[in-house]
Image (cartoon, rainbow, N blue to C red; front, side, top):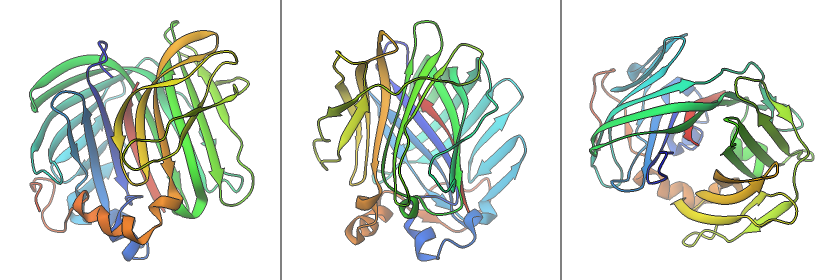
Length: 306
């Protein structure tokens, strides 16, 4: 998110795209044949793209990932994302460069379900981001975040719902909350504080706080907030049939904070009507290599707004 709060960006590289209808119809075989670079720009000039590409357009090594014409590379200090995408359903171009520089890189991954079929690694809980977009034309700096999720089964087979949020703290650290509702066994909330330059420090999960449902698709939202304080939705930036992303005003660890929040309903995602809607937002290209242009086991790595 930009320092002035006007802009935000989310980028998720998906290898075996977890929300892909094509991957589901293929029986979740050959994950590298179902990859995408999801880019969402929020605020003035907002854009959204999630074009799926086949294995001929995917190349990777320990420090470099190419999906179609877009790429990520890590030089040991900065993650650079070169974006060359086209939006959907409106085919507007999305071109530019994003640089994310972590203040620290953590080493611990966390299981998200009792069977440990799903894991999450908060690679850089606090980072600086520099966004330079040619289309739409915008340049800004802000606070960022980088994580990775992977698993041995589909998300909808592992969970009913989950919520996640991240809030920068006044000391330069960050607080992250993860509430999962697994299909197999009880869920256990994660409440983690990341001091500047340090590893995760668990803290007692605050009480739950209900939030209003998203306006269009009525996705349920909740978070956790210090006792005696109120959490509220400052802005809803994404409202889909199974997913909502919002900016919250809330209170954690004794201080008022602004948090990026997501709520996902995998029971909604499993509905046939929702699956049939997805290709309109997630077109697939099966030809071309890294230079191709955009047109008509799972894993992911993402840089999310703070």
